[in-house]
Image (cartoon, rainbow, N blue to C red; front, side, top):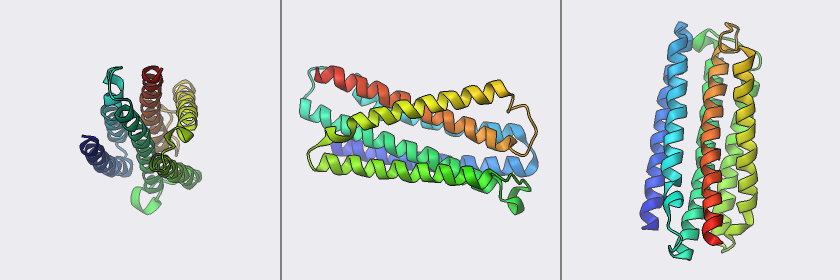
Length: 215
């Protein structure tokens, strides 16, 4: 059962990667042709897909009855932590690739001096999320899954707060209405923030549920 669940999670992530690549293609097309609504819709589609996958990934932990087998419940909880880290990596990777392609002037005609900087930052966050998922997997394999759970909770809370702050800034600053060089970047920022917020909330709910079941 646990093996089947892990396989399903991998298939979901691969599907999400496919959706992400398709959305990047639409974002780049919209940017190249000046179709703002296409850029917004494609970015929003990815954020929605991440949110749906986050719910599906964490649902088994949310619905697990208190009387469930403790060892199996722990393996599901740890597996979910790892899956959430991978979802974060996919979201950051999407943002990095989208940002890099958007400001490749021969491709879209757009140029923004900060585009490569944000692409690099998102790429580093992607790599960091992959490394964290690997650390969680190693800790679980060595029989010490609790070693990283507190850090996972802090990271989820921190990323969620940063995402909320970013969304508030974008909304209050009028960035979406501005037609400056960063108009496409702002849509990527918003979609990425929504994606990370969805994963963070799902992860925090799962960890709270796991702690209440353990108690």
